[in-house]
Structure formats: structure tokens, C-alpha cells
Image (tube, helix red, strand yellow):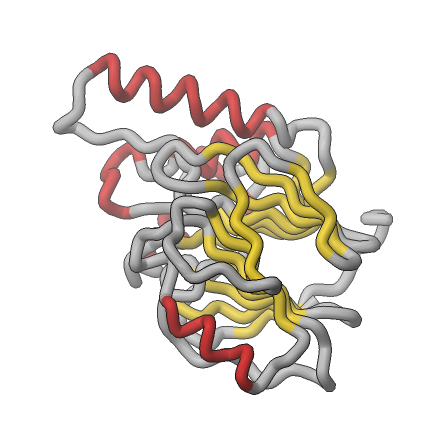
Length: 233
């Protein structure tokens, strides 16, 4: 798999058979091999996760499918599928399952012929100082409930929120995910260009048991080629 970081929470994943684009906000799409089908995901309507520009791509790519959260307002089309939380569908050669976000929209779990890809969207253990104790307690409860749905699934590639605006609570969501989900390769996202936050996580004692599964992000357009590790299959 080739993973390219676009911007913020936007990534592309290319494997032997298809290209997957998640939460495009801005950035340059990488060149891809041949005329592979493209699956374009948008987890919710927030402008840092959904850019209507994605619909321009179908002019040059006839084999394109959009998988959108149902809170996104866009004209209906045969190649646009709007999904609510807690939905399972088969689209061509892939299966898509949605989880309920703790903010807007959904998170995506995509199953291909030989791998699973998870993109969190804004599903995170959000903790805000200005909110009430009850609010933050419910946020923790709801996040853990959704992540536990993934605990028995082997995930090959995951994109998980790591947001510097949460201060001392920034690691909570990704730490809980790493401790409870069997994810082989994990990319932090939603860092608002504070790429040093990943380094702070990786050098923190909290990540000692899983830091070897987390990839660093430091620049837009960064590409990482992932090969199967011995014993993964």
C-alpha cells in the first residue's frame, strides 16, 4: 500500500486494485498507477473534512464512487452513496461499515479483498476544559463504546485523531485506540499542522507499548509505502 498524507485529516491509499481518498480538505492528489477505481470518502460536513471540489474529479475519472456521511448536502447521483452511522454496505469489491462519531457524521471501516482500513473522521475522545464534567464523562463513554466495536477486528491501516487543542488530554483518544484495537499501521491526523505532537506522543512513556506501530507525519504530500511485516498474514 502507498499512503499519502494530503493535509489535516486527508489521506490517499493506493493498493494493487484501487485508490481510496479520505476526508479531502486541500492538497494535491498523488499520481496513481493506471486507471484504477477510486473510492472517495467524506466523514462529515465540516469544511476541514469535506470539500465539494471532490465532485470535480469525476470529469477525469469515470470509475469513481463517493461514500459520504448523510449529513453532507450534495446533489444525488448514481455514484454518490450517503450513509448514516451504524450502516454496513457492499460497494463493488469493498465493504464499508460506519461508526457513530462523537462529533458530526461517521467513521469508516473499509474492508477490501485482503485488508481493513479505518478512518476516524471526528470520532475521538474529545475533552474540553470549558465543558461540564457530565459532557466530558459522556464523551469518554461514547468514544469507548464505538472503539470497542473494533476490538475483535484486525485492522491493517488506521487514521486516528491527535488534536493539539486538547492540551493534556490530546493523547487520550489515540492511546485508548492503540491499547484496544489490533491495528498494524497507524497514522495520527487532525493535528492542525502541529506535527511535533506526534513526536511528543512517541517520546512519552504512555506510548511505550505501541509506538512502533505509529507513523510520523511531518509534511504535506508525504508518501509512505507499507509492506507486510513478517507474520502479519
